[in-house]
Every structure is written in C-alpha cells, then in structure tokens.
Length: 293
Image 1 (cartoon, one colour):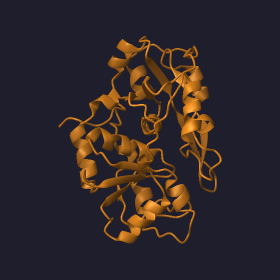
Image 2 (cartoon, rainbow, N blue to C red):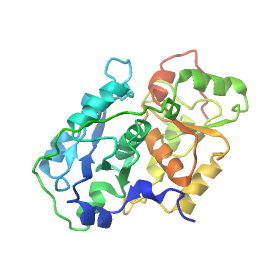
Image 3 (cartoon, rainbow, N blue to C red):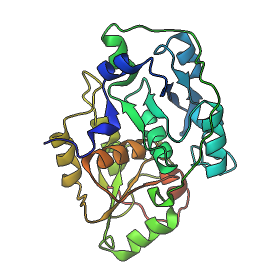
Image 4 (tube, rainbow, N blue to C red):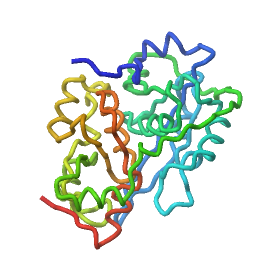
C-alpha cells in the first residue's frame, strides 16, 4: 500500500539535492516539554539547540513566541490569519514557498507547523521524514550559521474546518454514536486509559467515545522515520477512522494531535480536524466526563 499523498513528506536525500534551490525554505521547529513537579509540563523553545547545529541554511520557527495566540488561556493555540501571515512573512515564507519543516524529536512539532501552514493555504509545505535525527545519522553537514531568507509576503487563505473546538467535541459526546464523526486521542496509551493517574492534565482518562492512536507509535523507534503506509493505515482503521466521516484528533495541546492528523491526510482522509485546546481545556472543566479503563 502507498500513501495517497506521499508528496506531503520528503526524504533527506531529496532535501540534500534541493537544499540550495531558490524557492526552498527549510526550518527547524523543535519545542522541548519538561515535566513540572506537582503536575503539568513546561514548554521550552528549541532555539538554543538549533543554534548549536542545524541543517545548513535552515531557519528556526518559534511556535510559542511567534506562531501561537498567546492571548488565549491555553498554549499553542492557532493564531489569527493576520498574525500568522505576519510571522510567516517576517521569516521569509510566502504562501507559495516550498516549505520544508523538521524537528529533532520525532516529527510531531514539524507536523504541527505543517498543519498550521496548510490551514492557511501554503500547499507546498512538507515534513522531512526522520527530521534532524535522520539527517545527522547519515553523516550529513551541520551548520551554526543563521538563515538568510529575505522577508516575504504571505497571503493567507484560512480553512477553519481544519480545527475543532469544544462545542464540536460536546456534540460528538452527546450524539452517543459519534454523529458521523470519529474522535481519536493521540496521547500515549497510559494517558488514554487513565493508568497515568491524570498526571499531565489533572484528571485521568479520555473523552467518551474516543479511540487511541498514540503519536509516538507513528514512527519507527530505531530510525525515526514514519512507519510504512499499510501499518499506519491499519492503526487508524483499527481505531475506527472512516474516510466517509469527519475525523477529529486531540491530545494535550494540539501537537501530538497534529501528527495524527498529518498521517491521516497522507493516507487520504479528506475531512480531518485538530481539537486545538484538547485536554488542556477539556480536563480543566470538572463537569465534562472522562472515561478511565
């Protein structure tokens, strides 16, 4: 089985061949999450790690500082079209750029940016398969020089259907059968079942009716590459994803969920959305039900 949209992903071989192309823009997107005593997680920009060595010519996109709506109660929320366009243009990205995104932590941060850029009409955004881990494992060059992309004009074409909100999740729960949609949790299996005790978000378990495809299981642990299409298709089909339905993914704050959504898009699912605030919002309201297995 092949991906329906293999063009959403590029290999290190492809990038090495096209790294100097005038229309290619390469960016690292890493964010580190640290557990905090007493529960919760602290986000740290990956900029310092980027500065110690990155793919030659690559810039850095700071998710929290430049590409999130920090006026919202929850972090990593999608910014307005105008704010997004301003940040993208300032970094030298237009809506027609060949945009290559990577991280050093399993590709979910790159997938988050891919999902955001695609939702704003940048249709040539791609993810680097295996990210920096694959690039360095192959002995390819690393640089500490900053990017030199000139500012560009980004003309956004927003697609709000790519994001779900709490109202849609409530409607899913109230429908009992999902109402023609499927809700998939991208968190780990212990978080989904509640075996972790709710350490990350204050309450244990998953949203009623949700199934589970952990983001961390989408890649090969040995290589960091995404698993073959047939294996990934089986994971999502086993979780009840139906191409005729709307599929909504969630996690803690919309990052792992974007990784699931990215693979669903590669597999050819046409109606996919990310619940942006995810468990950060949902678990904070004690009146909303959770299921612990």
